[in-house]
Image: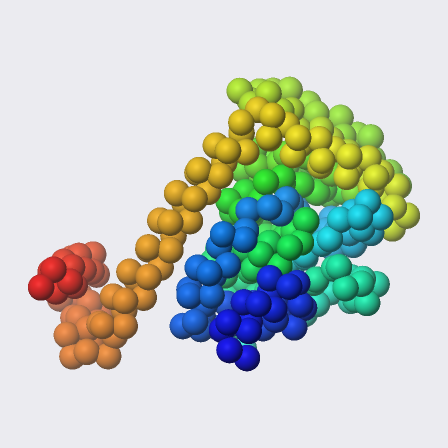
Length: 319
């Protein structure tokens, strides 16, 4: 499929074209930058919702229920599931979630799993590009479900407008479950599996934590109870999600976040491209191989060598 045909297919919302583009993104194909550059002006319309929380908190079931409710309201959905990577192929181990296959025949729902590829926090750089591709395909909502690896999941805030932090009753150390970092990124707390004993206690504890950690933000994260198995509380949760987006727009926070996100993204792209260019030129050269041997013998430290190689690289760029 040519680049122009691929772009046309994505903009038309064709699943095959979108899936193909995300595969190219994961493979770091050389054509990706050109394709995303042409798609960029068609992005920025989707409401991006991050769903994170500890393993076992029912994130996948919650995302499935949210999708059902959002579809009942006439909204189109894209779902990006960030899964642990296979150590052999780098691909997502869990594949497209079986529990989400009830939406497989719905042409207005696109589901894709992506591997973390060992990236700290589970959110690979390619996830942001995949979300942009889904956005360009015209989806109203993009749900990003993370692996739930702990505090490092704060990276989800970099790409999401609304962040849901899930937890369940009886999850052990309550303070640990909602520790600093995770707690700070939540726009909405979700106590899932609310039919289990201790759900009200968990809600009270989270509210107590919010009371002793005041924020200058006018939005106080609500604490919602849901049951992914029965669908209880899902409609109310979607109402709260939409209320949060309305707040972001009316308060000017959405515009501010957009500027910060653009800054972060530009820095990340520049860092990635510069690093890749540097390593492409250095790896396999006699100078690089000799530097590794000298570091291993403790003849020189890696910090000095790194600075020296970078300085030489930058000097060659000026020539």
